[in-house]
Image (cartoon, rainbow, N blue to C red; front, side):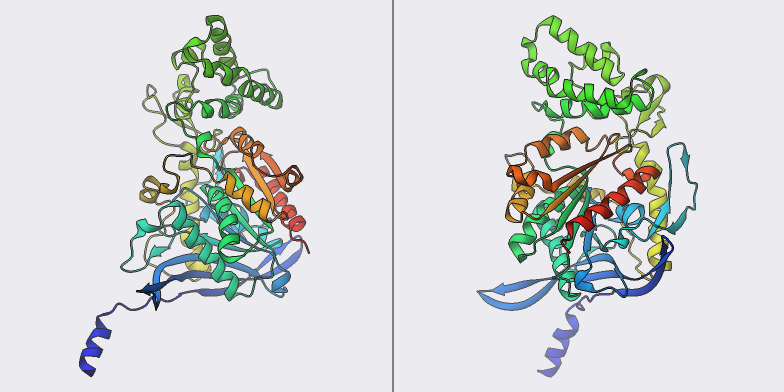
Length: 489
């Protein structure tokens, strides 16, 4: 019997364990030395298992990578803590980590002055750590995060399971570090804003965890505002001001000030343009001709092109068409960037020059930083963006309806009227255009007295607005002010 029990034990896989590494660091900010602790590694997520109504224990389901920065010599309960992540879906958190919020940042350069490899890491004097402890979370299948042995990674590649797993990381970290009485914030970028809005409601409902603030950077709360699908004319109007901004940047709309141009584009996008699209083939010829002329004037495209696409300028087409005469495509994530196109007859861009510009610096910096400076070793590749997860992400919860988390954010605000929301948009962001965000916020189902809880900021940059140095410095200050004002201390 003893031998049988020993054989059965030996056949079971070893239980995964947390592999956190802790290091101490210093950072000089405004002439003062900040001493902080960095804790990085994977924590094991476990789920309760029941068989025939009987509790069978906790089963390992995933190992999630995080990096936490906590200020030394600070009273923990009085110190705000921010949980940060990027989006994709399928993206790791390295962009916010090494671009904006962390105590170290990569020098990637910007349009026209990109840094050459092997790149450089420097202290980030504008780090959010000045105002808040920060925990960066890589969802399952991104970064070093993986499903546990015997589990299916795809189980986590979907809206609800993503919320549940990231929410569990937040609960575990908060509980293990005695931070339930600390002011708490979420910071998400791109699909990370979808996640953050969903988490604000999920954390309230599942754990009774109420937040002080949610920071939404490059926002997507309603996918119908962004998806160019047949029968949905909304994106054509909401992208128009961003097209105008990008065209202005590249000199395709001369002799106009940007603010004046954007105001003009916004008025047209909110009035005559959607009215024209709604008329379809019933639109009078003179009205259609007027709309063609106005769209060409605002976007820098030819009237012939606008006419041929039937007044509907899809964003991938715009990025390929705007500078076609120069044999250049413009960036989707950041329309300030351009790239030479060997096939200047292509209908859409086949790559994003703005993404190409930053991938190398951020990848090199993260892989060096986590191993050499933070002391964490892992031989699995750090997944910057898991394209398989991105392409196969499940929104089964929204079958037959629009994908939206706007109501979840509104519900969180109605339930917790102290919840504050910071919203950041880049004028040259061709992935999550600012006018689409404004449209969503304008229709948020909250009482009038809560409208003042939402703070909107705009930056002369793209999706990752912190690539632009002036925007990075301004945004860091804006986030610090938001956290300080929202901490209720």
